[in-house]
Length: 153
Image 1 (cartoon, rainbow, N blue to C red):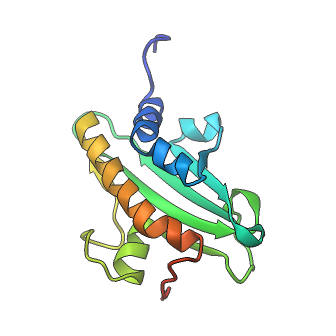
Image 2: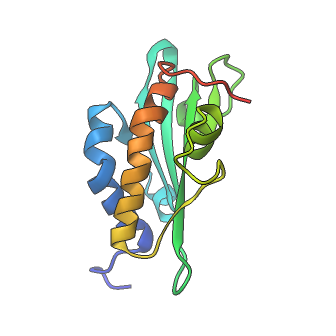
């Protein structure tokens, strides 16, 4: 790969920041500088919350070459430990965005609670990131801040 070519993960990060970076930043979420994780397709936004908690929004990219579409999913974590490490804290929670929206809130926006956003090109990637971004802002961020509680099964 030449210096001018970008890996699929670098390209995803660029489009991710273009589509949701400004809105996430305005809400206090910052992309962690973790190049090793970025190379593996994991991108994590973090915000300190009240009560010594952290809100984390994690994008996991699975890039497929050639004919198969690439995909990503979003996981939301509320923890008292940096990095979203599992905790016995009473407010610790971990849900995928699709589980939160479909199961916990009962909103049939997505076809299943085990949903991965798929894309084949930059246009589809941008649309998928925009859709996920809207759901994160509307449901995920308020849930992480405990402003929009949902009943977790």
